[in-house]
Length: 163
Image 1 (cartoon, helix red, strand yellow):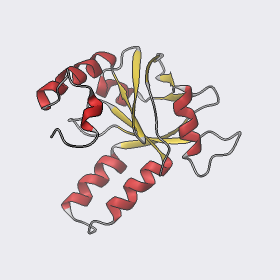
Image 2 (tube, rainbow, N blue to C red; image 1 turned 120 degrees about the horizontal axis):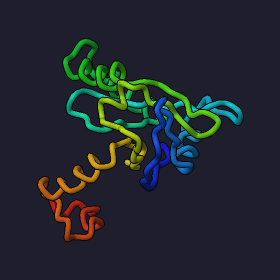
Image 3 (cartoon, rainbow, N blue to C red; image 1 turned 180 degrees about the vertical axis):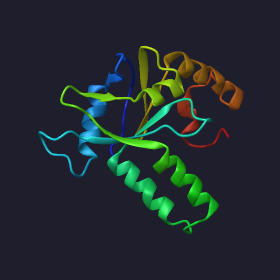
């Protein structure tokens, strides 16, 4: 089982698309890259997806290997396999974390989610998300439209009893 990301934080994105990855996220990225050793840059996969995605999703190498294994179980040429291959292979990039803890987000990805100076990194289990901060805030506000009770402690949902 891959290590988990924890926390959220905002980071400046410079004009060249460089952004610092939270330090705690970097430790998970290093631990989950089987080829990483001290002195080498750890690798991650950034999935940007199609028109319905308004965030970027960062996968460790181990997490993406798990996804690739699941995709490979579908029949070659099936519509479901093609859709997943497009999302996780074609609509993604592999990048490295440089020695200062930054990655470069290409202009295409920054434009897709409207990054204009700040990026919010949000943990999501064995992946993390990169959002334009206002869009993330709006996505949280919309949760109550999906049957989420904002007045209830979210830990109540852990046992699955509340629908």
